[in-house]
Each structure stands twice: as C-alpha cells, then as structure tokens.
Length: 463
Image 1 (cartoon, rainbow, N blue to C red):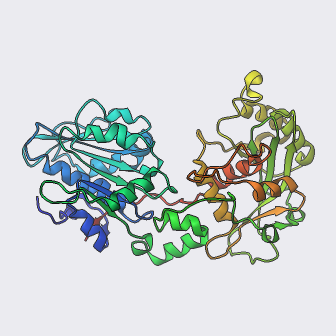
Image 2 (cartoon, rainbow, N blue to C red; image 1 turned 120 degrees about the horizontal axis):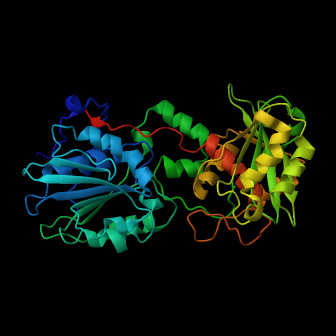
Image 3 (tube, helix red, strand yellow; image 1 turned 120 degrees about the vertical axis):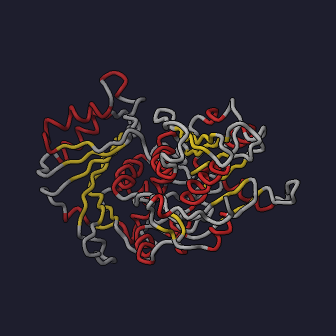
C-alpha cells in the first residue's frame, strides 16, 4: 500500500469527491488518535470513517498479530448500520472477502496484504461494553458528541492498549460537552510517540468548502445562525439563556386564526401531562406575519389554537377541549406528539395516551384522522434547533406565527430556558407550567422541518 489515496473509482463505481487540502492532510496523518469535527455533508465520515478504515484493514497490523480487528460505531447500533454497513460491503467486494459477511453480527472478513484476515465490525455505542473483552487495532467513533461521556475513557481506550490501536473521532459538535473537552485537550497536547510523531491530531473544515453554493444558500434559508454555525461550520456553539431565542412577539404574534381553512389539513400537537394538560392546534398557511413576505411555494406554520388545563388534567380532558373547539373541522387531521405516550399519566389504567386519543377523536373525525408518531422522540437539542430555524432563518426568513389568542403558547416561547451548563437541554424544573406547549409543537416541526433533512452522501472518493 502507498500513502496516496487508492485508485478505486473504477472498481467501486463511486462518485468522486473534489480535492480538499485539509482532507488530504488528514488522509496522510501519522497521529494515533485523529479528531474530525467538520460540518455536515462535508466528507468526514466518507473519508476518515469509511475509506481510511478500509485502507487500514487492507494494510493489516504488519503481521504483529494473527488478525487485524477494527470497528466503526455510532451512538446506536441502528445508526451505525444505516451509516456504514452497505457502504463498507461495497468497499470490500467479494474478491477481497475471506468468508461470507455476517449480516446478524454486522461483520466483514477480508484478506489483508499479509495474507491474514482483517475483521471489520459495525457496532452501536448505546452499549459501549460491546468493545470490551477482545483487543482492537482500530476504532471509529462517529457522532461522538452524542455518545455517552464514559465511552472513550472507560471502554474504548483500554481496548486499544494491547495492540497499541488507533482511533478516530468524527462528528459535528454538540455544544460544549465531552467532545469539546476532547478537542481542546487534543489541541493542547504535546504527546509524541517513540518515532516523534504526534499522538493527537485535530482536523476541521467548513461545509461551505465542500458543498455546492446553492446547497449552502438553501441551508442558510432553512437554519438560524447558531444552528448553521454548529451544523455546517462545525463550531462548538454555546447554547444558553432562552431556548427559543429567535422568538419575537412583534414578529411572530399575529391574527392568523382569521385565515383558518376548515377544509385544509389540520395538526394537533400533544405533550402528555397532568399539570398542565396541553395541546396545540396548527395549520400550514400561505398568509404570513404582516412584517414578512411569503416565499413562493412555501407555507407558514401557524398556531391557531391551544388547550391549557392548569390542574387535574388528563388526556381525555384535553381531547374533550379539542373536540369542543374544533370538532366541526372538515379536513384531514394529523396528530403529532410525545412518542412515549405519557407512561406516567392517564395511560396507567386505560391504555396508552395515544390509545385514549384515538378512542376520543376517531368518532369525531373518522378516517380523516392520522397519527404521525415515531417510535422514539428526537433529541431535545435537535428539536429546539428545528423550531428556532422555523422561527427565523439565518437570512431572516420567518415561517412561523402564533395567533394572539394563544397566550399560553406565547408565554412558553418567551419563558422556556436552557439548563445552565448543559449542551442545550431545556430547564424543566424552574417552572413546571412551561415547555409543554412548545414541546408538542417541536415534535411536529422536527419531523416535518428537521434541521438536517438531506440524506447522507454515499461513499465518495477524491478524483
């Protein structure tokens, strides 16, 4: 093997990725531990996580040990499989394989340059103890900022000691958490190995340097400043103060309820509580706040109603209020909300909260009723980022408004705060009446208008 990127385009039939100086230097890095905290969709996983990983597997461990063993990982096993599995199989064609791949264990076996077998494993770090028990030559921690803080020090690092294994950390920053600390410590490190090579190296570039200009323009139209800085510039942004810092009552509060269309699709957003019991009523509209101009082909998410029962509420009472206020709606009705179904509320005795909602609303809306609830909730920071980006993009586009009658929802947007010292989570304890209405809205927006809605690039190589 040479130090130059292998000419594999003709073999794997993959789209080339344009040359970038920092990425080329990263490819040649002799450091034992490499940290790549670049922007979204900019090639960090494709180069460091996939191609360089396969290169290491082909090079083996110089015959020092019977077989080379390496893993790539993500915060969950499913994430790791989605990101890596198909591409790694494409990068390891049958001509290289020593035995059939294991679909159940997500393991590929290929021959390396020394004629021994290299094992390539795909793991989830929701259970970091998966790496324990056997030594490793290389590890890849993707989306490291979303992994448990103890993953590296307590689990991965010890597993690399026997063979003096290498490791790469890849991912967009997630506030100033353990990922931030790792980067800063690595940048300050003066450690060198016996050959005088740096033990730690960090690599950073912007999505703007890789993606097409029109894609960057669209991202700036979709995202608020802080979210864009984190996601596309790879910056360690400090989220503090108000959660919905883009909310401005002078911009976002209007009389949008007057434009309600009884035949157009309708959205109910739920967050399950006893005190308070809440729900919001939304509709996508082409009528925008007076201070803004509608963009062709786009709609404005409009809050036109709310339910707020301060004490002794339950899911059935919330539904009764919705039926009382909106039972005459003639169009489609979509329900979004907390995927957990409120396990601590009404669900204890009468079934899940989602079952109760269906029992209450189906007789009123019939087949026009649709539930759009995922198996799990989005990460809280991702949900907040999606809402802020809908409130106002980096270039000032507003795609969200609240009717002036929804006083509790307005109060929520103005009052919900970020937990001090966190990576951007909501402070739920300072005021128990806050966050529930905005949480419900966030479940809808984060699903229909997520911050990052573009599919991951398939494996790409330099020309």
